[in-house]
Image (cartoon, rainbow, N blue to C red; front, side, top):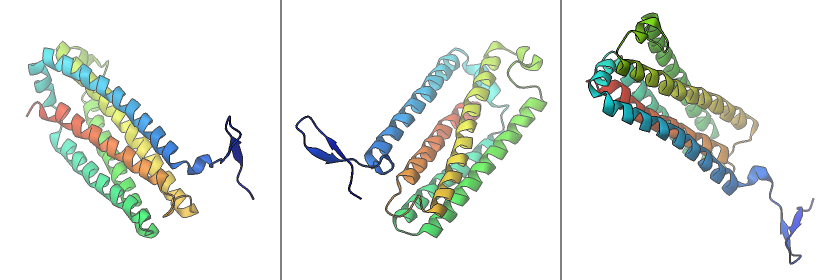
Length: 215
C-alpha cells in the first residue's frame, strides 16, 4: 500500500507519517507537558518560600514533628527506582526486552512501596489529628497551620504523580508484552522514563523543604 501524500502550495507531494511514529512530535509534546508540571510545582515552591520567610522558626519547629527516617527511606527508594527505570530504557534500546521488562517491574514495585510508606506516614499524622481543617491543627500557631497545609497539598500532589507513574509503568509493561514497545520504537518508554525522573526530582526538593529544615 502506497503512503498517503499531502500536497503543499506548490503542488509537491510529501509522505504523511503515522502519528504513532512521530518521534519528534511525541518528544516535544511531552516536554511541553513536563514544562507545565514544572510551572505548577514551581508556583507551590514559591508560595512555600514566601511563608517560610515569614515563619522560619515555626516552620522549623513543625518540620521536626515529621518522621525524617521515613522521608529518607522514600528518598533512597526514588533514587534507586530512577536508576532502574533509566537502565530499563537503555536495555530496551539494546534489544534486551526481557531484562528491560524486569527492570520496569522492579521500578513499579518500588513506586508502590514509596506510596505505601507515605500513606502510613499520613495515617499517623491523621490519627494524631494533624490534617487540614482538624480541630487540633486549627488550635496551633498560624505558621504551623500553613506548614502542614502546604505539606499535605504538595506531598499529596506528588503522591498523585506517583500513582500516575505506576499507571504509566503498568502500561509500558503491557506494551512491551504486545510489541508496542520494541528496540526500534522506544519513544513511549523514553517519555515514561523522563516522567519518572521528573517525579524523583520534585521529591528531591520536597524532602529537604519539609523534613530537614527542623534538623
